[in-house]
Image 1 (cartoon, rainbow, N blue to C red):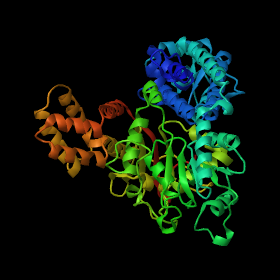
Image 2 (spheres, rainbow, N blue to C red):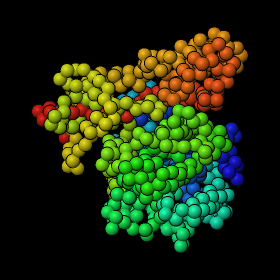
Image 3 (cartoon, rainbow, N blue to C red):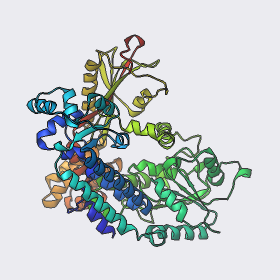
Image 4 (cartoon, helix red, strand yellow):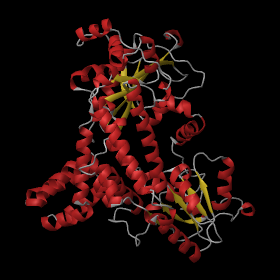
Length: 601
């Protein structure tokens, strides 16, 4: 059934279109330029949504049946709502994160014949205002109100007939998947059975060795909380971002070896948590970490392991790590290339450069020596407070969170410059998965790249802060900042990097004496050297190349063991995909002095 699901979602003959998430793709060719102008876009920003959605479904399926079912329910409900709106209102909605909640009671106005004739007569040269009215066929007031919320409507006349058909097909397919998986419960879930087996054996063998289990998804943690045993041997406690300080303190009392000894407890021996507890807390009374699913960012796994690897207060001389990786079949069927890439990078980071594969016999001692050893010594990531703030908004003020997600593309505002900061224009742009901030200083008229940390600090504001319209100085600064942003996105990794330079020289020498598949492998390897290999793999090239420079077949054989052909092809395909992406300006902010303030928005 698993293979059938993957084939339905992402196989070569898959009929799942994810139509609700890529409305722009269904615009008829003759109206595409008009719609692009209306939405202020270039290309199709939604064209990869189907791929991302399939990837999410597979990741959730790999995590737990509960996470998968909840995602199916959400997509089915959202697609049904889109189809109902299309049939009743004759329009499709486009937004950054599409929602129909604001449109439930909307009364759409019909376009009179005179206006329709005017649109047809001037279809290639009409004003932006008329664009909006013609495409959505709303009054100007209605249009402005919706656009201010990041909501755009496209009339069904501008959409291909296949849009409605694909919505209906997606609903049918997803409901069938839901029905197919209804037979899998906690009683016959093989992954759950396996975790139960390992946890029980571990605790029976070493009752004093507590366990921490991490998952990316709160739905999975809730599923495990309900379905893992609560008996004389296993005593679980669950934690996610919605839990309060009291729950965190209870966890410290049960899992932190630095907690006051007389106040330590043994009420719980199994902690089920999301990455909300992957930083800033000691959990070193535990000697086992389960990664129930693997995050894209390999440093997350290092942070998870770091909760129990606290040398200054060592409780166990040996630590155990269990990793539930995505299945190879899942990766191949859904083309989730970055999971494989990051998985290999994660292995290099955690287990050291000499480890080729993740096996039960591998050790973590040497490669984890660099981790901070106590809570005071640990430097919490700069973005932790922002992620916690976002989680809090998502949990306690969902309406505000939804409004933020519905901001239209290319949004721009002006704000008062905070004390200590320079006036100017900040621009954020994205190309594929790469996002870059740039800033043009008004005083110097110089634009520069700024880090995510610097940029996010500039966004800090009080709830009552007001925004303004941009000034006449905005566009000159915006253009300079945009140029710098584009330059940074396309900036190649420097060839002066010593390891990259050495590796390129060695590969080039080997290519001269290689033939057939060996030569092709080396040529592909050369293409990914600059930005597709971690330090450990570059060092492996250097070591192998110098040791076997006179024996090219042996050198290539060893290189393929360290950097498999499948890995090289994966990175190449990712790079080709990234290079094909258009650059999109997501937002821009003008910071101005009090004397420059424009119209209050």
